[in-house]
Image 1 (cartoon, rainbow, N blue to C red):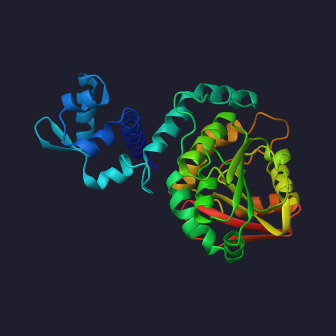
Image 2 (cartoon, rainbow, N blue to C red):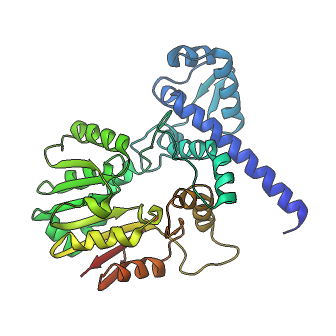
Image 3 (cartoon, rainbow, N blue to C red):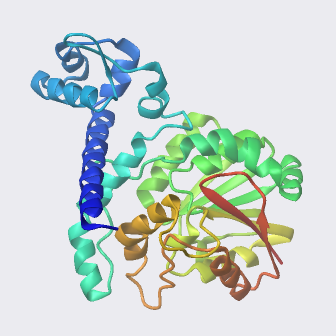
Length: 344
């Protein structure tokens, strides 16, 4: 790449980064939701409805108009186009992208600590829950796809869940994967586990509000020691690559399986082999690996230090070391994730 091309690329990336920061503001302040429900609005009206300062609201609206994210329907009056609502204002949409900006801002807050971690080989301090906490970035997918498309595409799993099964959902976060499964399969019970006590508290509330708390329970526990019984299915969704000891967790999951039970791992879909330059998705995964996933897995002795780019060969190696005899890569159509079925 020529120096001038690289310079232009960095400038364009800066433009995009600043746009993401303004999307973060719009999501956190409720600007997009208010424009979607009440628009078109003036800056005075937007500020009044969101309890914010008019001068700030006006500058934000002018930037959004300059970026093509909102429309100026007449001088001083702004509208969020209908086609932008699913992406910017509707958290239930599979297209919703504003949560990503919250994750990026949270990660940026810790970059100073990440710099220090690079120098020492250790890990940055865990990110504080406040002000945003962990965000339900996969909520829409778990509620709309997990139980409706992905699990039904695995005949042996679908049959077992349909008949009633005991499920452990490892690294469940805010609990939406557990809730999605329980809503889709009324006969199952789900035990969600996560290390984050505050996430488990939020998951418990989410289960109550979703009406499945009679069949879904959560524990703040290490899955390597916290799986309590015999499960027909253990799920580990978008989490194995973050674990310092993935083999220990997989081994515990295998030992907790009932007869003919299985472990379903869903993790980032990677290219089969590394390439330079890589695909845009792989560049995205490596970016997260450098600033977040790898650093936060490095704070314990002998960490696997997997990183976000966990290729099928790595997953297969972990599974075999954990004692599984069969590792099946499933042909499920999901652009973000690759699914693996592990069995004894």
